[in-house]
Amino acid sequence: MPAPLPLFPLNTPLVPGLVLPLHIFEPRYRGLVEDLLAVPDEDEREFGIVAVRDGRDIGRDGLDALYPVGTATILRQAERLPDGRYDIVTTGSRRFRLVGLDDRAPLLRGEVEFLEDVSDPADQFLAAQVTQRFRQYRIALSGQVAEPSDASGDDDEDAELPTDATVLSYLVTAAMVLPVKERQELLAAETTGERLALARGLLGRETALITTLSAVPSLDVPGVEPSVN
Image 1 (spheres, one colour):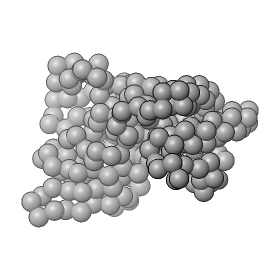
Image 2 (cartoon, helix red, strand yellow; image 1 turned 90 degrees about the vertical axis):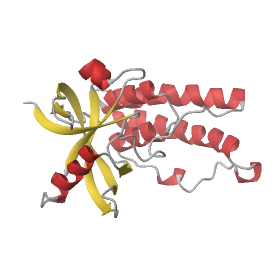
Image 3 (cartoon, one colour; image 1 turned 135 degrees about the vertical axis):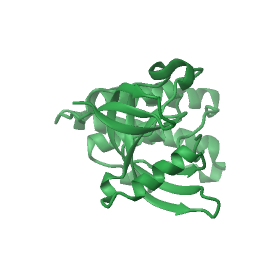
Image 4 (cartoon, one colour; image 1 turned 90 degrees about the horizontal axis):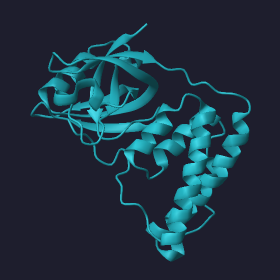
């Protein structure tokens, strides 16, 4: 059954597990933060992050301006500034499908259906392949963004990649430098296996492009800009 969820549109999707800082200055979102802080249970201080389609306007296009799958995020920290603005920290929690939109109030509210993460034991085989390709991708990427003496395949962070297939699929979704449309396709994959298979292909493509062109795509990485509210 659809449930109401306050929405915070962004220009890029959020994935479960990702920490997202936001700078809140619009009155409607200040009110949202205040309402959430009034909820006693921190784990219930939840609102939805949903990406806006390129070239679309919510006021003009309504529901069609938004991608159908978003991620609920939980307010974990909030600092109120002297002028009433907030600096907050949130953590992506669970995916949802947007089935309706109430844009009558200043704050957008969506009717959403929460999505389960469907996994299968066979996903571990795909996860092993994605882990290998992700390491190759990071090596190629580091060779372009670091000094030559710093580029190395012996990255301690690589050795700590998650073994859980679903967690890995979301980590790769968040970490790859991709257009919003492709990142959204990864987020919206119906199963962990489908997301891993798609990630495997994208990692192979991006690694080949970086190696061949000796260049990194000029795209924004999620979380760099704190907010577009």
